[in-house]
Length: 81
Image (cartoon, rainbow, N blue to C red):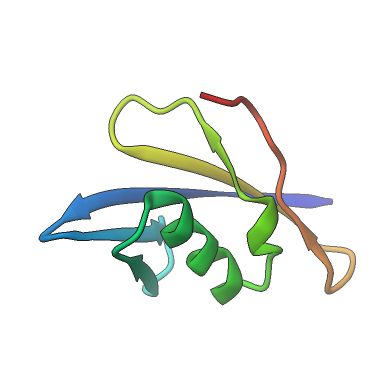
């Protein structure tokens, strides 16, 4: 069984802020939205180098797929922009 997590990134005051709905933690980066999403992936134990952007209506949206069977996680590319 796999859990999908959507990482949403917004830009405010010179910083990209990444969050996952339902989690209190956030991650931030001043470099790019991808780096902010990778920082969030690290916080939840996923591979930060596999983060992929998906189509979103507003802001930057990334998808994360984690395996519930074991401790390893993978990020799934749904669509490239």
